[in-house]
Structure formats: C-alpha cells, structure tokens
Length: 388
Image (cartoon, rainbow, N blue to C red):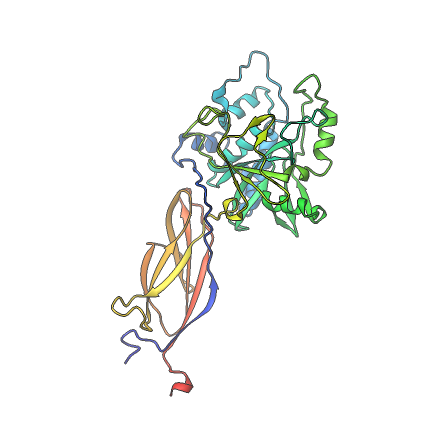
C-alpha cells in the first residue's frame, strides 16, 4: 500500500555524471545572438558548408583552417585602401579587405576566428599571450607577444586553445589543451609532453616588414623556436566578445585597452606595465575558475516533492535544472531510454520500482545541444533484511 501512495523504502543513486558548473569572479559580456552581422557571416561565406560534418571539435578546426585560407600574416594594404578604426573587431570588414588583397597580423586573425565561431553558435574569446618580464620590448626581440583565441568545446567540456594565425592547436595525450594548460606545461618544463597540431594551410607570411629594423626571417625564427610555447608565460583573457553589438573600434573607455583578466602565479608575476605604459582595466587572478569557467552544461538537483515533509522517503521527486549557457533557449530531458523532449527547468517525476535514469542538457538558440548530465536512482520498496 505504501508504494501505491508514492512511498519507497530505499532510494539510492546508482549512476552519477552530473556536471559541476564553474563560475568565475569576473563577468564576461557575450555577443547578442540576434546581431545581424553573425547571420551575414554565416550566410555570405556558407559556413555550414565550410565546416562540413564530423564532431563539433573537428568542425571548429575546419573553420580555423578555412580562416587561414582567407589571408596570410602581414601588413600589406592594396593601393588606395584606407583602414579606418571601424574595421576593428569586425570580421566582415576584415574578410572583405582580404578579398581585395589586404593581409593582417595575429590580432585580426584571432578576432576573425572568434566572430566566425559565434556565427556558428560556438562561444569563443580572445586571448593575448606574452613572454614574461617584458615591461619594455628589448631591441633584440621586436615581437614578444601574440594573439590567439579559445573556443568552448562541448566535446572536451573545456576551453580549447586555437591559434588562428599559425593555424594550430596543441594537445597533450591526444586531448586539446587550453591556454592555461599550455602555460602550465611550459613553466613546469613539460613542453615535450605537448604536441603542436598543424592545420592546413600552415603559417604563411607575405614578407611585409612592420618597420625598417624588422627582419622578417629572424623574427619568425625567434617566434617558432619553442613552438611558440614560451609566449604563454603570461596569459590575458579579454572579457567580452560582443564587439558587433557594442563596437569599441579597438578601444574601451578611450584607454586603448579592452578589459582583461591576467593569470598570475609564482612564475608569472603581475606585469603592471607593457611597452613602457601602465595597463588600465586589467585584473590579476590566480584562480583557475576565472579563466576556465564552464559553459553549456546542465546540472541536476533532486529533492523530495513532498512539501509537507521534505525528509520523507518518497517516490515523488522534484527535478531542478540549472545551467550557464550563453544564448540559452531551453532544456531537453530524457527519462530512461525514451526520446529527448523539451522540458521546463523544474518538474516532478514518480520513480518506478527499479532503476530510473534522468538525463538533461541545455540547447542554445542556434540549436547547439550542450553537455549531458546523468543521474540514475534506484527505488526499492522492500525493507532491508536487518529491519525485517
């Protein structure tokens, strides 16, 4: 009779793959998914066809390789082309200029890739890297910094480093690494454990010189001498990617800098100056969650649906779902071996006798399905032998 009334003798968790949502201290400003430039990028360049099939990560690599075919590294401008500040952080403008023969350096390659990812519904961010102790750039090393990007990977449940200018990513034991993980490998003298995975086409330059003293061959020999890993001594994450909906033209608050969080540890002390200037709008942190916060996960919480007695061992459970998913649309839930169905964030289920499996995932407005969480509960209506 008790079972008929929704009572159970024993409830136990028999499977638990429930994603922990990690939140950093500093806010990140995400692009508006309804920004028309994103649709224009996606449609004008037929990005769905560009990325093809395969896993999400394979598609993200394919997009990076396609970017590398659009312009090489350089500073060439066709005769009569004027570069105005409205081009800053605008992949449409960069790609149009490239079609006319313009070439660009690493910040443009990285910014273009970030916005191409956004056009596909993938969250991405700009990361600046620098060799340590470079308050002043020494004359023997004219280039001590680099711009790359990171894209959130649902496949690997983490931020993954992409170097669009070099058209590479890095992997350790076959798993792509983040910028912070690459930093750790370098400063801990574990660089040999990391593979530099080259895409097609490889890094190319048009040979244009940035100054009279800039020796292109020498500079890139220095740049690639350690597979660029020594540039990851300092990491700076730009805390927004909403440059279409909120253009800054390369500047925030007139300072010339975008708001950034800089990684600090015993090998990467805060660098308060850069190229002889103080650095405003920079926050320093040694907390991994401030750099490797998580996205696109569903977290499942279960509680008794008996509002009168929340401690009752009941077969009626209230399921509460939470997520941090930019551009969130809705949750999908699957019970046992059933089909995935759209779901509210809170609902009540009755556990049947035996094992009951609950799975949940978020979906964004682009239809990108997030990371699945699973909790399985076993209901037993028989008292344990020691209580009989």
